Length: 413
Image 1: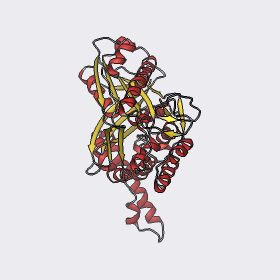
Image 2: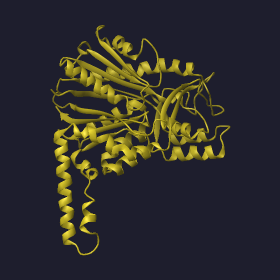
Image 3: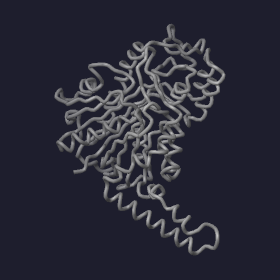
């Protein structure tokens, strides 16, 4: 039985942050050391981001607010609201994004109505309240009062992947189950000025957004784009527990995002993918055949050329990394930052085109924590070059350092 993700939809709040403008504001804040000012400029300039979105309407240069809480446009000073103020705004604005994303997913799923939803899985790490977003979706979307509700909270950027895995398990246990999965993150609520390098990096990357999709055993209809959810895997890297973390402070949530994270991913991404690929016999055979064929071609090249590289040197160029870009057409890599994408592309031997969905998501929306990977997956599904039956590998990274991965197959109705 195939379990399918359908009607993938995304939502961003209307207030747009232009990266260059935000950079200049952060760099001009009082109390920053000269080193911190240089770090702000470098982090923002090298982020790979042009624009981001926020639910905080006063975070604009032309805002006219009598009693600003986050940003005083007149003095261009970033303010320091307490955690309660930030969470109250989360309750108000996150609810809107959860409901809007869920509504769009229902509207985009032919042959399915609100009463068909049996389970709701919500995801967020940027705020808390109860009754929570799972409850609000049932009430606001007119779902059945008996709808089973589950919330994955405070897991970080990788959490949409276990949400999809959980939804898949529900459907495998009950083929009639229809699961609405919704992720919404309001990262901008916790951005702050600081001379701390981790805080500066976080301020240059994070933003707000939401995404939703419907998981069931029902196949897509004619003209609909969907993803068969084939396999999922979780791996904790041997190092990195202290390099990516998310804690609650008195003045909002505090992100630890070490500059060493891209190096950890570079060292361990292949071993993190190995158990996922091992679960798929057809992919394993394809990868083996690709490596053998590449090695044969390089050996023939070695025999025909005079001088230069030896046959042994050429044969070592045939690697599983270079075969991956052929066996798996599309890669949905969580754009935790530009350097993470650079490391992944180089380590796995991917093409520039295969990283376009991730880089474009980062460029136009920034890092929306758990919702981001769903934006990338939607970009792949909407791509004109995406064909029925092509494989997709999705990866997201989070505190721990945890790597969540999934194999999927494009299904055109």
